[in-house]
Each structure stands twice: as structure tokens, then as C-alpha cells.
Length: 116
Image (cartoon, rainbow, N blue to C red):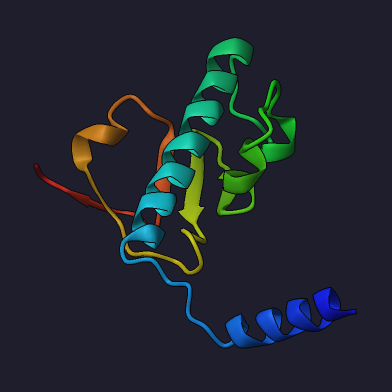
């Protein structure tokens, strides 16, 4: 009985805590975006076309569900649009060097492209 009371008190005590880690949204957001692009582009290499949806991606690992739920993908006539929806807990504002998208099919995104 003591174990249950202690567990309940512990949960109640931490429920109001802020578990925000500085920079976590940017780090997870970057990883989510890059992982999505990697497997989308791999699908294109293997199949000759971009996937109709992220559900068409094959050979996913156990952790790929993390980024699948963190991006929004839209196939277009000539490539795809990819929007980052979540980093760790919220939507970060990310910047990537414009050179990163060279040779990729990405057309529209909420990522800011910068000269570097």
C-alpha cells in the first residue's frame, strides 16, 4: 500500500514540472527533417518515383515512427513538399544551408534556406 501512495505522490509532484530541454526542439526537429528526406529520397532511388504518401515507405526501423509523426509530406508533380510539424515538444524554426537541398526533390517547406 505504501508503494502505491508513494507512486501517486511522486506522479503528482512531477506533473507540474517543466521538462523542457534547451535546444531539444531544434535538435529533434533537424533529425526528424533529415531522416524524412533521407528515406523519401531513398524511395525515389529504389522505385524511380517519390512516394504517394509516407505510408509507401519500405524497410523502416523501429524509431522511424518518431519522425513520421513529426513531418507533413505532400507529393507534387515534380517532387514533394515537406513541412516540419514538431521537434521535441513544439515546432522549431530551423535554418538549413541552401546547398543542402541541391539535387533533392523538395519544393516547398517551412524550413528557412540560408546562404552559408
